[in-house]
Image (tube, rainbow, N blue to C red):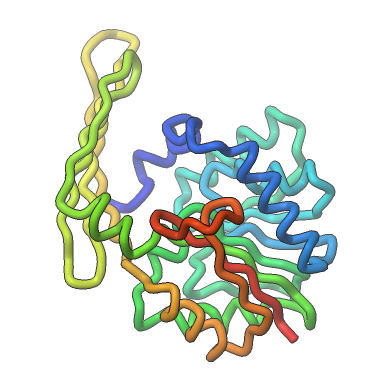
Length: 241
């Protein structure tokens, strides 16, 4: 039950109400405010929404994701929209580029999938992939959200084409999410898909400490889209000296 083996086909549509357009503008503005150069890598790109948005904002950007299913959708969507972005298979904890880049983004919970013991090594690897003055921007679902909003709760939706059930089990360091999808088939009936996700509850101080330990400076932590409310999501922006 690999993460995003099934969800990868529908992730962008299922999250269409999370304010993608405003989020993309915030992302581009934050990169600009930190003086990011013209080329970068969008790690954990998923179906590629933010990769495409960054291209439209004037950046040369490559998408990287651990899910082949996600990348298949990302490539197809980019081709359909006429966006010439490259998409590559890769893991944020083992990120390796052919050359250094001006910025790296990891949007919408990518870092929540990194175990606490791998935070510093992951950030050190990202640091090594950046040019001097390079910018790293990412966000996490807060520890409060992981523990108290997701926690032991259940979610679901019954749509015309796709229905799902989402059961969470809290762990000492985060949450395990078991998802079951039912996709309506053209010939009638439903196809069932199951997958499991594990996210970790990282604290703000823990993240800042790991970034500093990796060598990053000018570390900014702020709430969703720059707000002061960090109760559910925290954005981090930092720079390589």
